[in-house]
Length: 292
Image 1 (cartoon, rainbow, N blue to C red):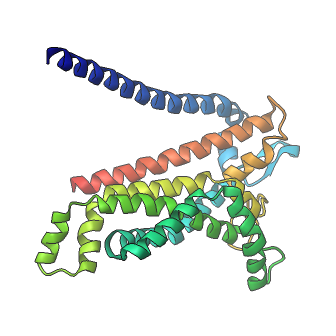
Image 2: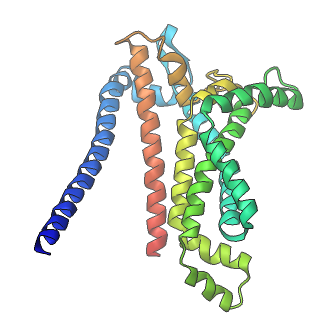
Image 3: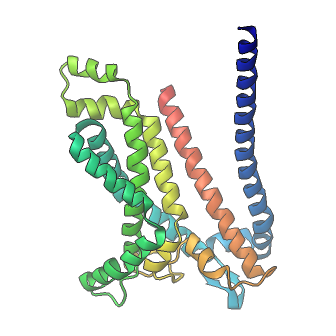
């Protein structure tokens, strides 16, 4: 018995050390990426000037003008549009699957959501380019359907699987006693789902939204195929270029060590900080509500 106890303690210490090392590696990767982006991106910001870089409206490597305001506003508008369309649909789907769907129907919807999650980004872009872009062009009588609207619609579909899967898991984790107490007090199933289960799963739902926002901000391949990839200020029916598509479309052409290449790293730094800011704001909001 004594030897068995020693063996278990040794195994527990070994597993604890393994988990600790995994956590350290994860943090180290984040720090490494942060430091690399800072080292690679700050020289261009110093050379161009922070104000001209962030608020300049012209991006022209031929004339050494590197203003990313059109990219920045396009990313904000595109992400906001995708969130407005995708988040309510994803959350409603998650509530339906977790609290109302018959088992057979839930299995079918689960399969569809899993298929959406497994589809490569380039396939979304290809379908959008072949089906959605011409449809927008015909519907609104545009010269080209590759616009911000097409990008928003594609992003809204792409973020659905992340939101549905994470939010559903959070809703299923709500203790059954909460719902039984609500029903016992006379609330309907719909009222219980929205006023008890949903608030109780707020942290997991917020995580789902963060994942969806991160997917929307970080997508490049699908968006470059449907957005037009033109550095215009954002307009719903204008061809536009996102922060991610600017990097993807130009990095292979920028010579090593040039101001052009350094500016693209600076775009990546801005994108990274943008995502971090959104995560921090959501975490602060969640903590503030819990404390309230």
